[in-house]
Image (cartoon, rainbow, N blue to C red; front, side, top):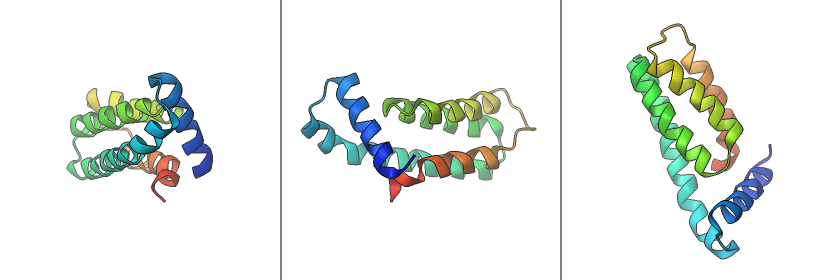
Length: 110
């Protein structure tokens, strides 16, 4: 999805889900994106711990942020990171999953 398509989807979702006016969405969207970027950075940093439980917690956090923006498909990938991490799975290629998630949401940060 292009950045414009992502933003349009998020605007519609926020308006419909939370009954927000276009002006309210416009005012709140930058802080939602900033929060999402922070959670993405934290997820990437969690990889450095090598601890699946820490990675799983970070996956849980970003999953919630993605769901709050209506990005369900992206949240599914975060959920996979969360579940595998919380189960202590050391065979999962967390760096590859996190890189995929980064590629998916990167257009929002440009």
